[in-house]
Length: 113
Image (cartoon, rainbow, N blue to C red):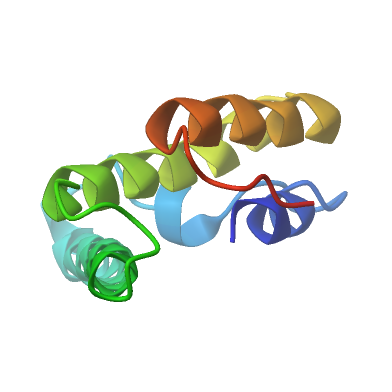
């Protein structure tokens, strides 16, 4: 999920993700757009939390895993990637950060990519 997102976010133009970076600071006139984008981000977070819960049920993650906290942390990391990309962080650094984050969040997981 993270590596694929980085590949998309670091394309030459436009860099980043409009769902994450668009309309974060807007006037009341554009409140409906801001609300729609926030709902979309919340929905993505809920799907990540759901996948973490599935991993616990399927014993891919330990039974003591805090599903909500881990799902939120993964979502926060995912939402930060387009911001970093837009600010010019090279893809290689973003990909390397995934390995660091996953090894910290999921020390028993098998690395991918």
